Image 1 (cartoon, rainbow, N blue to C red):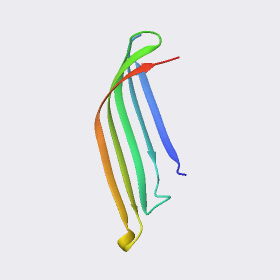
Image 2: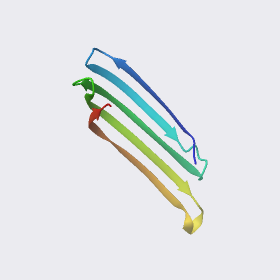
Image 3: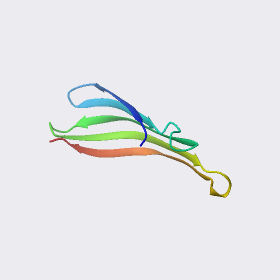
Image 4: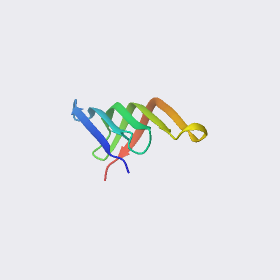
Length: 91
């Protein structure tokens, strides 16, 4: 179990268009020598109807983990980023 701190902010530009930014960070080196994960997503949303939207965003995720000593030392540093296109359905 690790703490997770996140935030999200958005701004409506019109009835159909909006911008959003969200991010979170987790780990804080609690369960290992080094253990931290963070995510960032920035994008725009276009509302097609009252229940359906399209979203185009750019996402960046990073995961860093190090633990152990000697031959049992494990290390992983992973970064992933790219465009995100999604359809959102609200009920």
